[in-house]
Amino acid sequence: MDLLDDLAARGLIHDTTDRTALAARLAQGPMSLYVGFDPTADSLHVGHLVGQLFLRRFQLAGHRPFPLAGGATGMVGDPSGRSDERNLLDLETLRHNVSRIELQLQRLLDFSPGPNQARLVNNADWTEPVRLLDFLRDVGKFVTVNQMLAKESVKSRLDSDNGLSFTEFSYSLLQANDFRHLYEHEGVELQAGGSDQWGNIVAGVDLIRRGLSKSAHAMTHPLVTKADGSKFGKSVDGAVWLDPDKTSPYQFRQFWVQVDDSMVGRYLQMFSLASMEEIGAVLADHEAAPERRVAQRALASELTRLVHGDDAESAAAQAATVLFGGDPTMASADALAAVAREVPSSERPAASLDDLLTTLVDIGLATSNGDARRTLQQRGYRANGVQLDENAQLSAIAPLHNQYLLLRKGKANHHLIKIS
RNA sequence: GGGUCGGUACCCAAGCGGCCAAAGGGAGCAGACUGUAAAUCUGCCGGCUCAGCCUUCGAAGGUUCGAAUCCUUCUCGGCCCA
Image (cartoon, rainbow, N blue to C red; front, side, top):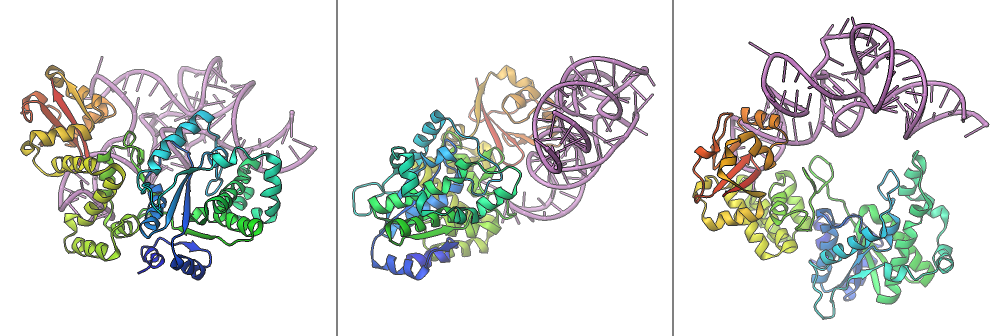
């Protein structure tokens, strides 16, 4: 199975420029491709993984990936898929975001020297020095406003009451210029991205054709959605980030473990680097006994390893085993230490535990005393596996290994107290 | 600048002088059933020292025994006119 067929089988191809031409080019030998990531936040999130993994898949197939940090495009803001104008980020924030994102862009790819070594680029490097008049002559002249107005992202904004600033209107020119620059100077022949990027990507293809009289390729993947069609990658507390300081490896792994059955097959195909045959085998296992959640576990382990490394993955897995494995009183001291690192935890004096409501609020398992009281009435809390009621005394519960109190709200919210 | 309609809890949205901490829906939380899934059912969903009290309906004043509801000013947003 060649690369294109594999991508298609995984449901990763939304659109491409001339498919047979692209297939022919890929068959000829290694090529370079790029995917851009704008620094709209100080971390990438799980939604960006598809793009990152796209680069990885191509690299594994012998091609050369260029992850691009949008230091320049991030200053302008992409109007695609947005109903209103973005707030511009100040320079300091932007620079900080770029530096964080660049670290993450280096995680999934192989940067060691070789013919298909990955290379990180930042479009600010070639965009900032360009003078306005040169830009208008060298880029603007090749693009008609008629064409730009025809773009879906522009049209919808023109029809809305919010309007569209000239700045955002110009966004696709910058991105088109990126593609041209990389084509001309780095031999990058393909740009990939989410389906919302199609317009911006083909703007680059057009620019290369008109400005350089060459032909380049474009490919987009479908945007990932959840079973109910809502936005993918949002958990209760917001986005699921790739930065371990924003979303711990444990939370990251749990996000994948808790994926719906109805979506897990699709996610495996889209996110896993395992072959379609291997994925098929995992899914067969899963369907034979869905309650074992083999597919979710496979997905969670692989991605946590990719993003956070082997050690973080095994610590997260160990913690999950204690938290969801049944009787916490059986957990080893080592396992509890792992839990302490992965789950919100605190150290409190034994005497403070007598005030149950205050304790629950302090450790974040309730938003107010009233909330704590209600949840207690509904029997929503457990401490070391024992269900609590309104009159429960935490001091009456035997601590694990003489020092730990593992509190649980509902099924998946935990807090570990170390008694001092 | 003129006119007009509107700003209600996390979001959408009823309410238009007392029975309003405020209908309904969504989201969220807990329980039952389960498989760290989905669906379904039940309860909760401003705060507190919780059969009561306190603070809320853009902001500030006012009318009234009593205001989310009426009046004034301000403020923000939509639409129409200039």
